Amino acid sequence: MKIDDIRQVLIIGSGTMGQQIGFQCALSGYDVALYDMEQGILDNAMDRINRLANSFVSDGRLTKEAAEEVMEKIRTTIDAEDAGKKADFVSESVPEDPELKGRVFAQFNKICPAHTIFTTNTSSLIPSMFAEATGRPGRFAAFHFHDVRFNNIVDIMPHPGTSHETLELIKAFADRIGQVAIVLQKENFGYVFNAMLMELMKSAQSLAANNVASIEDIDRAWMGVMHTQVGPFGIMDSIGLDTVWKVTDYWANILKDPQAIANAAFMKKYVDAGNVGVKTGKGFYSYPAPAFGEPGFIEGKQS
Ligand SMILES: NC(=O)c1ccc[n+]([C@@H]2O[C@H](COP(=O)([O-])OP(=O)(O)OC[C@H]3O[C@@H](n4cnc5c(N)ncnc54)[C@H](O)[C@@H]3O)[C@@H](O)[C@H]2O)c1
Image (tube, rainbow, N blue to C red; front, side, top):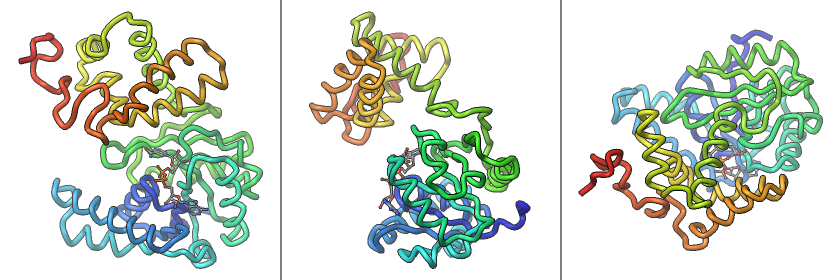
């Protein structure tokens, strides 16, 4: 199989990420089938993809006509047979559960042609956790997106059984859809960027939970030295403190690390108070105008 043989892309799961990945593939000229369990979910997904396309028009990345053409390349279906029988490339974005992901791939393994490449957009799992369950481990790897609205970095993470041909095809496909691929040489929880981000968040949480410095000063230190517009606590607010707490708590329980347990307790106070960041208007900072975005924040001279 050659990269030009990939024409039809199947997106399994039409939530936050399935919408973005489907849009990005259609934007690059691929015919996209968006599959989910209910038509209402798919209708909602199409509304959101339409909004995404309109935002590309507003900021000049697409003309109105081009945006309409992109939308025409995306179709929805709740019929697995219809979704999978002509797919050349599959990107799965169902919820983060290895058993569910394995089950969904096993279902599509029976439907898709033998040449179809299977990829998972998992954020915290590794592909070998459900490679055998896919029924075609050689044609399967992780292909992980961050946020196509703001960046074009993707991770490609093969498992030990991924074939060389599959890896090369996924790399070529990433290039065709305008993404810069970070290709892992071995499996690693959190890929590359998320692995670094987790460490940064853990250090920042430990500093605050141990009362070493204030939240603002920790962010100020990072932003001032690294010349960034946001620090670790601002980043956590935008991810969502509920999500950050879940991940922190999950690993604290697995590793039984006392500092991670203290960090999880520190995060939970915010979650229990319903202050989970940008999406609720309050987290470590208040939104839409957080203090770290005001002039003079780094100098500690805000009005
Ligand atoms: N949200 C993020 O920022 C982000 C970033 C990178 C990777 N991811 C990963 O992407 C995956 C999806 O995350 P999301 O945030 O898009 O989740 P989401 O909850 O927004 O969407 C999941 C979708 O999968 C559908 N679904 C559930 N079971 C299904 C099934 N059996 N068959 C078909 N569809 C099914 C749901 O109806 C829903 O529409 C997860 O593995 C997550 O770890 C998420």
